[in-house]
Length: 369
Image 1 (cartoon, rainbow, N blue to C red):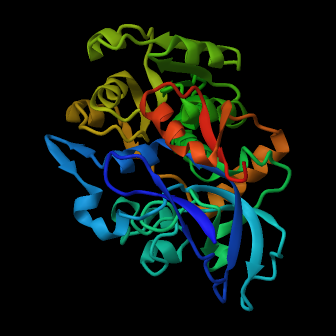
Image 2 (image 1 turned 180 degrees about the horizontal axis):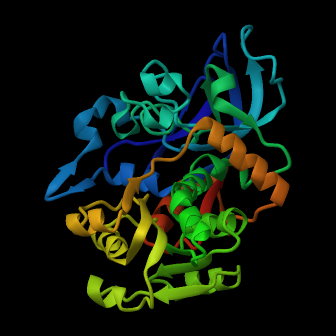
């Protein structure tokens, strides 16, 4: 038997149930899970309210209640191969410790066929992904087909860090890649390159770590409403920090910056933060929205055109990009956010800490504890 923590209804604590250990897929594996990350996306799904702006909200349970009731969340997954099917990839063996790539997609659309399953055209709200519409990592075991397309060996990375690589680290890394063209253009012109990260939580901390290797010559600024989080990042080599007031307007926040920004990543993703980012964007600059608070953006269309600016949304990254990121993480011994470890039975406490804004880094469940 294995244990899993499941959704029973929106806005309610997860409950633990037991089921028989799943059968091993012919072309896949069964994992004995060791650590699972707890992400803000898990909180959004549990809350069951997605704000699309303009008064438009969506309920995942209303879209497909049967899919989510009884579902175990958790898309940051790390475990040990317990068994393998007869047609599973020979690149893996029983006992290998692996990170799961959760952004599975449908495996048949045009995007999935070119290794961009995070773009999957048949995957509204992530209903095809591990830990969202499919069984996830808040469990002691899980079965995965097509292990060649889902699994990456951990290598020398800390086991507690490993599950975070598939979502928080990958998303931050992907966001940084999206601003590269704007920064390169300014570098060729002999101009200073300025990066702004809005949000100093777990993803912001990953972005700080990777930016020092991807863009070592850039001036890096981080903005947040938490003094404590900003102090943490000041110790990690951030050039500038900006403390926001919770009650200040967009215009008042904009006045806290002495110049425009060339690459902006919004890890909050609210109407106010995205609108602020658009206001601060330099000529030729790129802003990337990653956070899932929701709402809508206020931006001048003529200003966007005249400034040759780019606004992008990023939903994680490709399987190949994740492999590249893991190699860099190993080679440079990149230090990510502070990790707070919870026992598996404390999954609801971890979710509450994220929901209440008291999580200072990333939460990881020790499944075996």
